[in-house]
Length: 145
Image (cartoon, rainbow, N blue to C red; front, side):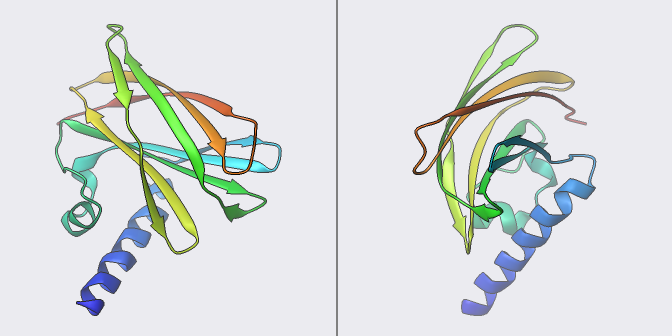
């Protein structure tokens, strides 16, 4: 049991580390001492063990956002909210779950996608202990093969 949880964590960390090197590149936005990392990807690329461990539905018709907040190089908690809007003006309400892995806290949200759907994301992040909220905007086109 302990060994299998360790293996799942190692796989999850390997996946999250390898994401910036993949075609689903991670982006980051800096606000003073804060760095907000954001990754949008289809959930079918997740390893089954990772998806199961974090209760993420793997599907070619599901997308996922992963947000990580750092303050002066160290992970920090945050309140994360946001929406996505596709080119047909259809709104996607995003509900973020907090996942803690050691010193890093991930904020994960999943949503439905269709082939060649472009989603414009607007994410508001308020780091723990800060009265300032930061907004990041980016877009991602999803392919469902």
